[in-house]
Length: 299
Figure 1 (cartoon, rainbow, N blue to C red):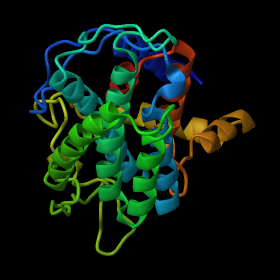
Figure 2: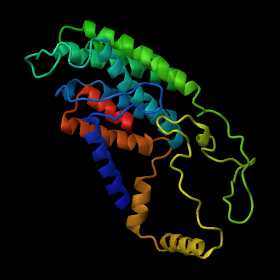
Figure 3: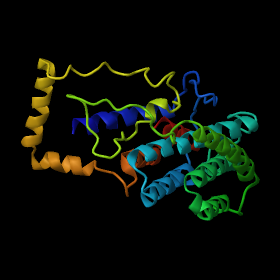
Figure 4: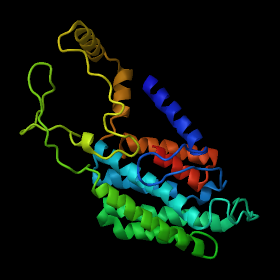
C-alpha cells in the first residue's frame, strides 16, 4: 500500500511539473523545452484518445511489460515534441493571442486545432510503427479527430498534422536504433548466490536494457545502486529471512495487492495503468494539450 501512495504522490508531482516550465533540455538530442499554461478546453484534447488507443493495442498485441514500457514513452515524447514544434512553426506559443469567445483561450480555435493536429500526426506514425496491422484504423482516427470540430476539418489541424507526422518519423527512427530490439549477448554468471534461468539456453528477460539508449540519463549506470549484500553474509541472511517470513505468512490482503498489480501480457500493463491515472488528472485539472502531452512524456 505504501508503494501505491508513493507512486501516486510522484504522479501528482508530475502533474505540477507538466503545468510549469521545464529546466534545460536533457541529452535526448530532440530539443524538448518548456510547457506553459494554456487552453482550458479538456474536451477538445486529442492526446488522451491516442493514449487510450495505445493501451488497447498493447493489450490486444500481448505486449509484455518491458515492451509496453518501451512503447508508451515513444508515443508520449512524440506527442509533446510535435506540439512544441507546431507552435514554434507558427511563431511561438503566444502568437495570435486572441480569445475565441467560446472558452477555448489564447489563440482561439487555430491554436486548439494546431495542437490537436500535431498530436494526431505524431501519434499515427508512432503507433503504425508499433502496430502495423492497425494502420488503417489509426488513419481513420486521425480523420475523425480532424473533422470533430464545427465546420469539419480546420486548416490549422492540417498544419499541425504535417509537423506531427515529421516528428513521429523522427521518433520512429530513434526507436529503430535505440538498441531495445538487440538480442542479449552477455554471459550469465552461475554458481552459489546467483539467479538461475529455467530456460534452455539460459536467458535474462530485459538483458538488453543496459544497452538501450536512454532518454535523459547520461548512461545506463548513472543512478545504479550499490551491489546487494554478499551471499551468505549476515546482512544477506537477515534480508532473506525477512522475505521468507513475508512469503510464508502473507495475508489475504497482501495476496490481493499482488494480484491487483499483476498487469502482465493481455493487459495495458502497469505502465498503462499509470497512463490512465494521468488522463484522469488531466481531465480533473483541465490541462491544455501542451500540458497534457508534457505529462505523458514525463511518464
